[in-house]
Image (cartoon, rainbow, N blue to C red):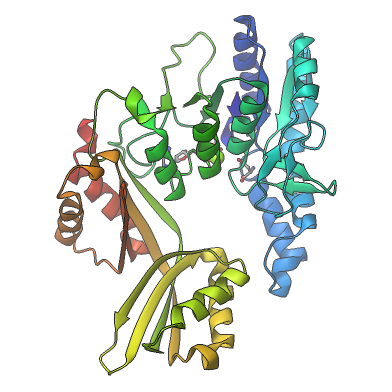
Length: 410
Ligand code: ADP
Ligand code: ASP
Ligand code: MG
């Protein structure tokens, strides 16, 4: 059972989590619980590190002390939930990532889990103890605390389920995965089931209900995964939530399953590039060396002979650094001008049905055109189409697409 930030936002909610855990234990299951920090806590901790450390000096915000600070929110909630369960007469103890241990690589701030030796947890759970595990954190092979990237408690939970051989229930502040973010479109419908592939795309395209890596891991390790609400009392009709499963297990086929959006985008435009081999390699090689993740890319011919323009998107946090990196190499790359636009958003439609149906893109472009939304960049894959638009039109675009694919009627 994993509980996110809003589910453990205060002591009353932690007590309700305690009741949900107790009810699960009462059915005779062995239970491990993964908790996030109280909502807002991690943002506060990140802001402190920005003020004190790496980012303040213009360096990439990735170091081991960053992780020491931001991992602390989960230590608090793990302790509080274990205490709460004990006060209810249950046998529980908290576990920090290093105690389990959840062993990660050393990419601090975005570490990946390498392995979780299950013996310690299994022994405790076999003795009837509820394991309350701090999400988001692990330990690298040098013994330093590492965190798994924002939203990483989902991944902690799936990894623990895989390690001890269980199923993973993600309890959050919505009662499942919806056709789009229910906070933006009140007509969004809850999906009874969604395939791993679609969920993977939805997550990586901005639907933060599950961290992308958690879906990747569930898919590769065959962990049964479910998303459901923590805002119910045990015994109340809990609803089935949403089951994330193999495509073959979904009887009802849809062409488009959902619409996702991300405001965490920035667009870098390079003008007047030489139209010769090797230019892209120079630009993106430098960005890769600096660990800047590039998403959408378009190149077009400029008016003048032999010249080209290029646009690409990066995460907002990397934007200034990306511009700095290309500026420093302006002579070598040979462009005339660079511009940064942070007022952009990426809106995507996702569905496995696209593989076999024509006209999905047409519906998207028509719906956006009818609302007067200009498309700046387009990118596609087998099961998704993404467009980059002016951030001011994000909600409008999401709602227009939701209606265009009749997702309110799912
Ligand atoms: P937690 O703190 O429990 O990890 P998150 O805030 O990370 O919760 O994720 C839950 C939120 O994800 C919801 O409150 C909702 O606004 C957002 N969300 C975005 N897209 C979707 C979607 N397609 N279905 C459900 N929730 C979504
Ligand atoms: N507390 C961490 C975050 O806000 C991890 C999580 O909640 O999943 O990113
Ligand atoms: Mg989350």
